Image (cartoon, rainbow, N blue to C red; front, side, top):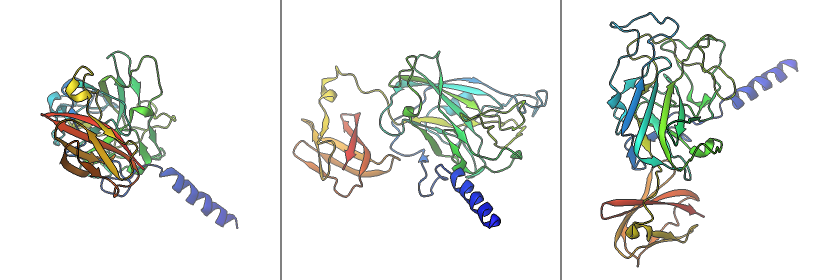
Amino acid sequence: MIKVIFLFLCSSFVLQAQNYAPAAGQPGSTAIAADSDVFIAWATSIELQRGYVNISNPSQEYEGSNYATYGVAEDALGIATNNVVSLGDAGEAILTFETPIANEDGFDFAVFENSFSDTFLELAFVEVSSDGVNYFRFPSHSETQTETQVGGFGSVDPTYLNNLAGKYRGLFGTPFDLSDIEDDVLLNKNNITHVKIIDVVGSIDPAYARYDSFGNAINDPFSTPFYSSGFDLDGIGVINQQSLSINDEEYSAISIYPNPASNELHINSTEKVDVSIYDILGKMMISKEVNSNNAIQISELKSGIYLVRIALNGKVSQHRLIKN
């Protein structure tokens, strides 16, 4: 009987431990492909502060430098392509955008790393700022065990990770929802101008360890004493950004109705427009050209939240649709 209880408790622990979304391509994954149309913009500027190739041995060099040297800062700008800049142990990068990121329904942006597999995961904290001075970190969680160090070429299960960049393999972004950050008078979630990426030193040695929001040491491949050490930043894709100016009459007049909707969606526009509807992970569900006299049939869409993009004369407005 004692053995049965012990096995039950162990099984319960395993089930409770794997709380989060699985690898890219698996059912329930939140990974978003770099070429998804859900991205409307990418980072346009970067400030880079490299870290050591091995923070536990700061004098250790690789190809003549004790700091990470792989890639150049500009490799993290624009669409993710697997051309990256390595941050090094505890290195940082601050990225900015032509138009600020906004907090709307669902994920607001995604961070890309270049992992070659679903389990070799080099992780990073993500922080945001609306003034370039005060930064706020996404609450993160790592349920990876902390008894044994994950080696330099070791594996990490993505189902143990939440709100840490690098959760997914190359060309699949880890998405972030600004609603996950607690409200603060010093943070305007609808005017995110700066995103900071901070390499997680994956060591479980207290002298170098980095901790999640629950106080757990974050265990990821360590050490990686090469010129490509640490988090390899490939890009930041924007899903939601500040709306067009209210003074732009041509676009402020565009709207969708009814919302919520069940069977039909109408576009309030005096001109013919191109309409695309995406699910929350960026998969295009409907795309068509419509005018004010046409209704878009949405009865086959599952209940949930969708992104509606309306293109007119080379500009795009976006709207949130609730499907009943």
